Length: 410
Image (cartoon, rainbow, N blue to C red; front, side, top):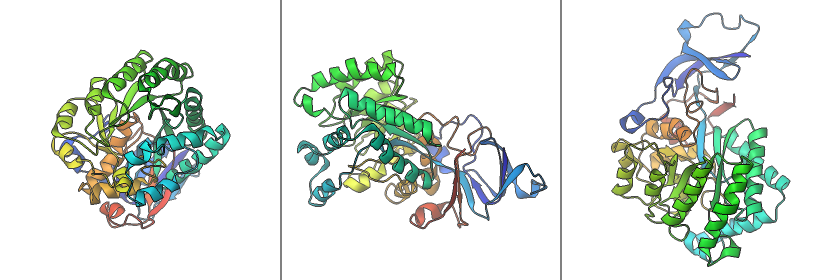
């Protein structure tokens, strides 16, 4: 099927074929064409240009024509870090946060991740899928076209497998591009309290073999941070995952400077995520690596944590990705437009830098920038069409104004 989107006020996010990420000063610019059209064939971007070069609109009965009515057309957001497969919610802990308890204090009292694990254990696979698909459809309506979903609320062999099977089911039934991430090392399961080494053994010797045998995960993750898993624990898990050819992505430096960035780089992690607490040593460790530093400003907003030093990373010549961290405890929102706004408002990124961090670089952080994340001939046509807006900056500036007219997936 051929489609032509015409009367595009601005076609934004254009990149040449083969560009997989933007680093340093290259993040400062968003290539665009004013008064443009875009050709899509069988869900793939096939051509683009200015309207004065387009002839015969409506003359081909086999082509579908979509009038953008002067709005922006841009690539869908790619959300490279979410935990949207979970059961119930944790609104009770919201009251604890209001009362002044920290994330660590709530976790120490048996809440947090362990609370979600209890809820998930009591929820059937079908019901877990139903609840999760509500969130999938929610983020798609807000402009997300690709999402990485982590396990990590199971914390037993069977419940982690249950989560990953739900993620596989979402892959099979949702139009979104979905990547699955095995995060058995999200917290130590209740049955292993005080026996962290034994829990790491469980992850390595029972969980990972099952995950690999069923082909359930694209990536493996570890929460390498204060009060959770050590650098040594992380290295053990990543070495075991490497035996099965599963590439790592790491939670690092949310609560403390943990060493998670360095161990992630050492094991060629695709991304290191959070980075609310960071030093120049992390910037130096990432130089020359293929690891994408990914920051989660929604988590900083909800928990009152510092925002990542995104501008310092960019000024050092590094790339930066932004993602939502959509989860029930520390970032209960998957609105990537809000993430883009926080990048500008709280992290002092320019609208162009924040846009690139939420599209091409976040696509790289989940391993799909060869097919998504930009307006590039040959890539999938996952697109946002907006109402007429004055500029790219308006998307972040008026971040609650409903500007999305249509979301096109494939």
